[in-house]
Image (cartoon, rainbow, N blue to C red; front, top):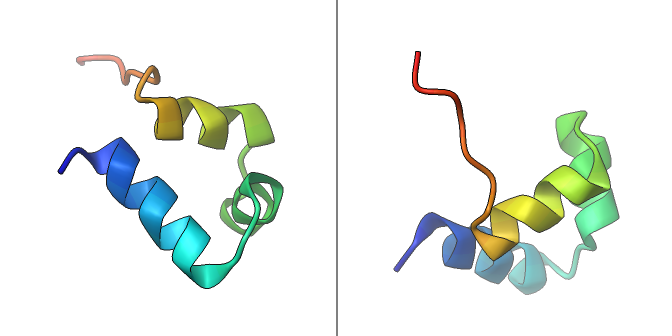
Length: 45
């Protein structure tokens, strides 16, 4: 299972919205959306 699937599965199991997760983590809602879609990439420093 890919990390984006795990993030989405765990969020839904808790009954939380992407906005709630974003607020808790201190990131933007679009960031959480990108994580769940698997399109967010980190820089390879």
